[in-house]
Image 1 (tube, rainbow, N blue to C red):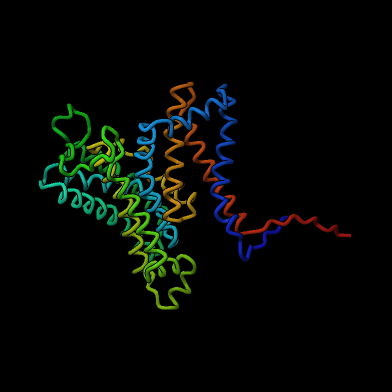
Image 2: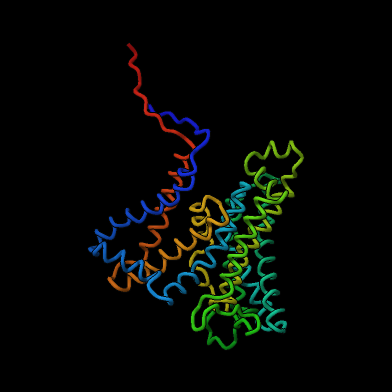
Length: 356
């Protein structure tokens, strides 16, 4: 017989060591499919590490991949703290990207110190608006936001495809479905010459630190934590659940929208249907690995990005599928969920007494 007993005060080592242990176990378990594929395991892991950290170019590529993951990870972390299960960061990312392109491809023109803030604000607002609707449906009518936000992802991507075949299509794209490029004054400048890592990384880091201060040091942050811990008790104490949830929706959707801006204005330069390889969904894994900590999101985003970039490099070198990266990330999430459960509960195995 198995009995679960809640832990009153789990140790700090247990709380903070679970994500590290989860990532370690996931990487070790990845040796099984590597061995089945006939790859030299030690060499494969060496190639993964060098592919992500072996040169300035590799580090730049890893940080470029980490930038949208930090922003979508923050979007999931702040929403999940309030028990708002936002699964729609992918759609919010695309809406933010589309708004940035609509404004930043020449509709208005100006110097960089005007255009960059304008496209950032436009993208954040577009992402925020996408989440307010499902949030109000949840608070007013009890509609499950997991369903609404997930389904909105597909609606948004279809809408983006329609716009790229219509109003936003670049007439110079030779029929390829992509938007006009973002004008030079709206482009996020690179941080290192001839490297792809750009100003979006700095913006993502600032957002992480600002969100950590907001959650821990402000009244609004306290209300968000209170709603997440016990919504009924928070309402009884006078906290407006609807107002707090709408604030969370604006923050979460806005951060996901900024991820879209960072991609079109920093990495790619234009909007296309393959803009995101699933950053919105990967952001959920990033947030869970970080245990919803804004600063922890930075570390977990770097881990996930290094796995993706390192696996791509390894697959080219020894001919192993790059989908191994998805496997490692998925196993990391599974391990951290199991570890989180064991952090909250003690497991007791008891021998069932015989009837006689």
